[in-house]
Length: 134
Image 1 (cartoon, one colour):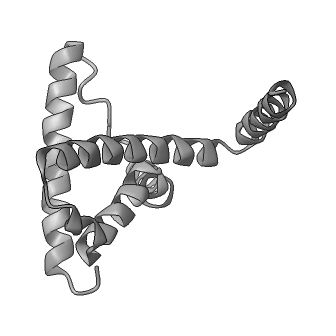
Image 2: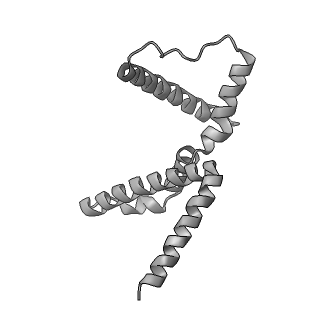
Image 3: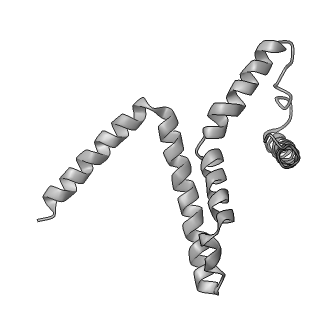
């Protein structure tokens, strides 16, 4: 009785996997959306169980935060801003060596990279707030 719907679902999933293989950006985008949905579900359930304020999910601020989550986790930022900017810098200044952490042990290099990326991201975010164009 359930064999026919299950077979149809399996065929649809196989088609979707094949289709996503042709569009890696879309595959990355959907992966980001799954991550965002999972984090949202966990936080929502925890707030529901602990008596948190669920009204915040109907606010403009929440919708703005979700749009930023889609923009960054969905890979849109990387595709439209980060990769073109890094490519442009490489073309404009080819003598610059962006392999600054190659000689640092893996865990230490990751920690240094994470701290620097977070600090730079913070100051760029501050700049966005102070710049009327952004």
